[in-house]
Every structure is written in C-alpha cells, then in structure tokens.
Length: 257
Ligand code: S3P
Image (cartoon, rainbow, N blue to C red; front, side):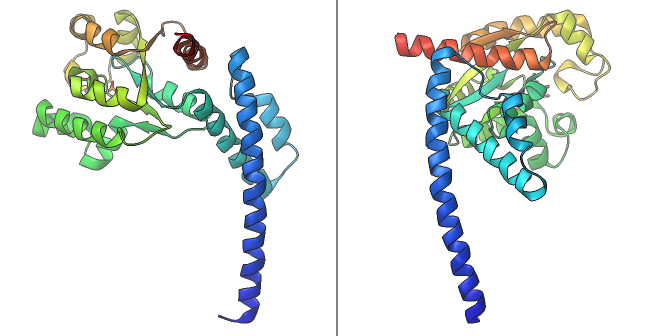
C-alpha cells in the first residue's frame, strides 16, 4: 500500500476513534434522558425536537444526524423497554402498519413474520397454503419464531394464527412483551372484505366466518397478551401512542410489584 493511502487511513481511524468517543458520550446522555422520561412517562420520539436538530444540517450531514437520532431513540427505547415488542392479534387489526410506526418511533427494526416467510418460501402465503396446506405453513412459522427468539430489541409483527401453537407463545414471551391489538368483527370485516390474501378466511370473506374464528381464538389471544389495545376508531398514530403508554404502565407495575 502506498504511504499516502496509509497515512490517509490512519487519519480516518483517528476520526473514527473520536466519533466513537463522542457517540458513546451522546448515548450516555441519552440514557439519562430515558431515565427522566421514565419518571414522567414521556414519549421517546419527539418530532419537533428532531426536526430542530436536523434543520441545522443538510445533505450527507443531515443523513448522518438522521441516523444518529434513530440510534439514540433505539438506545432510549432499550433502556425503557429492554425486550422485543411483539404485536399479536387477528387479521386486519393493523399489526403491520402499527408495527412500522412503532418501530420508527422507538428507533428499532421492524420484522413482519409473514413478510419474512413469503420471502423465504418464495411465494405468497395464500399460494403456499393452497399448494402445501396449513400444517406446512404453521411448521415454517414455528421455525421462524424459534429463530427470532434469539434476537433482542425488535418490534415483531406476527401472523394472526401465531398463538395457535403454545410453543410460539412461550418462545415469543422469552424475550418479549406481547401486545394484543383487537377490533370488533364489523371493523375487521370492513378492513378485509375483498382481500384475497387471507387463506384462513376462504375466498369469500363474511362477517360470520370472521366472528366464528374470532370466538375460537379469543382466549388464546387474551391469555398470551401482556397488554391489549382496542383499535376500533383509532388512527395508527393513536394506537402507537397507546402502546407506548401501556408499556410504561407495565414497567411501572413490574418495578413496583
Ligand atoms: C393467518 C394470518 C395471516 C397469515 C396467514 C394465517 C391466521 O397473517 O399468517 O394467512 O391464521 O390468522 P395476518 O394476521 O398478518 O393477516
């Protein structure tokens, strides 16, 4: 290697060391902010504050600070809620859209189990059900759940049938708090009618099929849940806010109890 390149790399390494020192210092302060917010149950993501910081920067620097802010949110969220946040509930309750926003606000990665399975299986879930049957799908789902049990600090969106297997529930509970999203059957019907991607509801989605399946699963969902949010008439933003408030309360009970 030429001595010029060697020298430039040495200077880059020095910059990185300095960045690392400052980043650590920033995260330590962020942890203090998290402890303060815990006492007051304040939100982790404060858009005005982040915009105020980002407005000082442009281009690559803005992108750099955008990522710093995301990682700082993640740090706060791990101090406050040191576990996976697992969304469970029937089809159409909004697990995916809520999961995406929740993950954003907590600076975490969002993993949608069905999306990972579709990628892995190479076909849509509806097609997989048709070709291989439900039992094969459940097997693949179980394998993925066991794999994800090893990871920490995620927001997980599960498929509506994940609670059918008690092994899935106990695996998800190992590293996570389970947040149940519910909705009235009428709400679910309005959201799902005409949707052909839900094999367990059959081709022609009816209020009756939804009602029957909800009844069958109701206890499985409520037994598994640490926290329940009724989503009817709420926006994705409101549901996300309620989840964070609920998690604060849950933590409070754990520390007091
Ligand atoms: C299922 C729900 C689906 C998907 C599969 C089975 C179920 O996920 O996992 O079609 O049994 O309720 P969503 O709840 O995300 O639709």
